[in-house]
Length: 157
Image (cartoon, rainbow, N blue to C red):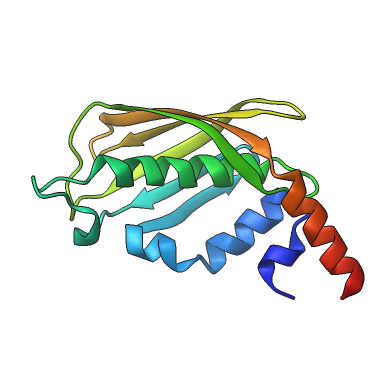
């Protein structure tokens, strides 16, 4: 059974721990790797690759937003039971310092509020000296359609 058909089984925390052990190729492309996975809190180590550098020589803001969407998304999933996919409703990013390829950063997401229709996650990216480089808030809603599709697919398997 493919991983997209396993939504709704097990807990979200179990699913994120499994992803941490065998991450999608997107994580390698971005230079992200899982460091800590807890219910409601996920930490990724980010070593931005040259693939995410803009013409000015720093990490492109769109990739910073993508890193936030990833850390916030897996953090939201980590609290779900059963494991539930989420859709990003809103992503707000404050860019405070430039990020450089070849440097190491921490991206940490933590659930601030969760309900049946909306989950709010706050995240920060800090450099090796602990300085705040960017911060974000991200609102998610459960992707019930994908969850229902996975349930139907599982019933026919």
